[in-house]
Length: 214
Length: 192
Image (cartoon, rainbow over all chains, first blue to last red; front, side, top):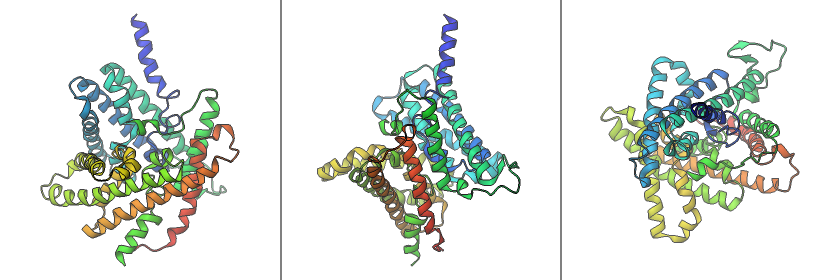
């Protein structure tokens, strides 16, 4: 029985990475996905911030889920999320001022990241604290992985570097377009196409379900 | 002249959707048809025109005055949620046809990055009150413009023979990439 339970928790974690990947499958959290992935390090920083906020808000929402009246639940969730985002933002500003400057307004914009409110509404408000923790970690990991993938492709092609280290030598003509906004759209479009190809047979959702149902 | 440049800059050169990636969710979700794209654009512009100045006033006369800037995000999001709710109630009471046209989009706007993004940009930049109003209107116009162009392209895309895995979101994003490329042509216009 105990083994079965652990198995379930593990699945709760895994589903966020591939089967229900928030970025490739549900198209959630598009603003940061596109905006900060012009380098791998920015993607990693944004991913970590989102994991932190998602984990904390999932736990908080799961704890208070029985005492919050149904009508005002969204407002309460959003205030919880905004509080944790403020914590993350102040932490980044104090410890990593360079990263904080590079991410700019996209750190506070985590407040309206549909992944976080979507998980609070669809999962944490109906599940135990333990399951919510694993769900938050899994979804956060899936989001971070997507960001890293996008950041890697764009940084290598756009500036010929990986994590700031030169890897493509001087003879490589840089695709400047990849680090500009247009490159973000093109790369993500192609990556979603590849994701669809690999998970063929399963129906993919083609609208931003989470944002629109919340 | 200054005001004119702020408007043009917000609407075209630094387009919220195509340069800052704000409001991508409705951009992908609602841009199937031109009329719904227009309604959504109008609803967003309307809410922006109210929340932009409102958050400006709150930032300058409450948060900065009392030295509690760290409450910025919490207070902005509460103000936005409350204003969206009020606007929805107001429109339902005053103009039922208008409510039918854009009412269903209003609850979604609370979680639209573009609205909070506007509030944050207004707080970051040294705008005065009039400039912040113009900036809000320009941003809304830019959002509507991007949404409508996208909807027009997607209506035609329905008749195109798109390879299987690229159908839906993937091809929409690639098309948006080309659109962003086209909008980069405006970036030579001086804004200062």
